[in-house]
Image (cartoon, rainbow, N blue to C red):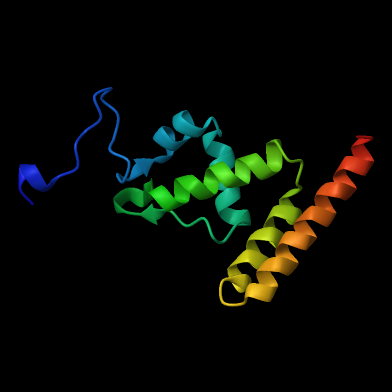
Length: 121
């Protein structure tokens, strides 16, 4: 690959958007602790960083997006780990079935409303 074909490095010295990131870089960028990222890897089979020499984890852009989504669901929307697991599982099954997508949305809304009721909102 010639220098001209490589993605430009951002002016702030960070990595290009499509670059692989280490667990430390992901932790700094997302605010999710490294031990939590490792825990999530065991709980969410959709989160599969690439492992290379020395068992180092390298996260792809799609892993970063999933981490941000899991973090938002757990810490901002009040989902439980099991609730996020169920949502992600239903979404992966729904990719080929539009009716399943609607059921997943409905189930998510029902869970959110139940959480609001429990929180007294």
